[in-house]
Length: 277
Image (cartoon, rainbow, N blue to C red; front, side):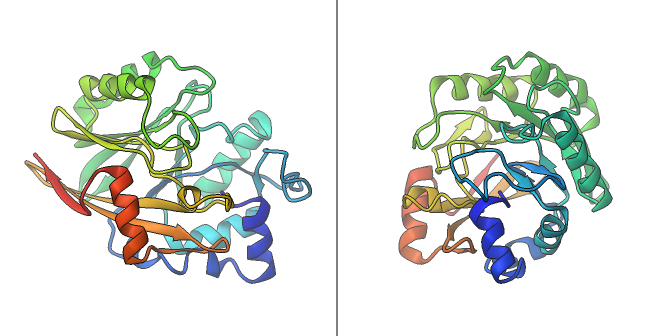
């Protein structure tokens, strides 16, 4: 999220400081994927004037400069802020991202552009967005997974779901995740609760119910200033995961210290490294 206090900090210092502490996590990755919590438009920010108005827009120049060091491959727009500036804002966001070489996927109403494909080492990885807060139906996403299955080396679903600030996933999240895996998804990595939630293994597939915040200005609790970066290494017969706890201090992301990292991994219920068949 690059509006409100995040934008103010970037403008007062530099966009470089936002992610300088986590760039090493991205450097050797073949592909990098994130959830973009807001619109990229030239509309003046409302949230910077009044932080109680939860409508986020990112100035294009600031967003381009902030995101460039991350070299993102794709971002999900399947969330409750992608339509903060309505359809025009959503479409503007798509346009900016595509111009910067970042593939957008997902829709707030699960209605358009549900998925995208990125090629990694001559293999097709399919990314599918799902947003449950406006329409909890999983039907469109399940059908998209089924449609894509034969063309994809791996399918990763990126859902936006669950209850804010709850440390354990709810029954609806679990049911939807299991549907996605049953339909053919190889990995599920969720967002929205703003805190790290439990990680589940289901039918040999990993479900990360919530990674928490990676960049946000929710400075009111320990849990909302910590999150997870997940590295998945896909092999022919197994997938290896490396979890890196991160912390946000003064709107600057950094790798968490040992004590904080232990606490984050305890919330996830996983070791920092694990392999699933």
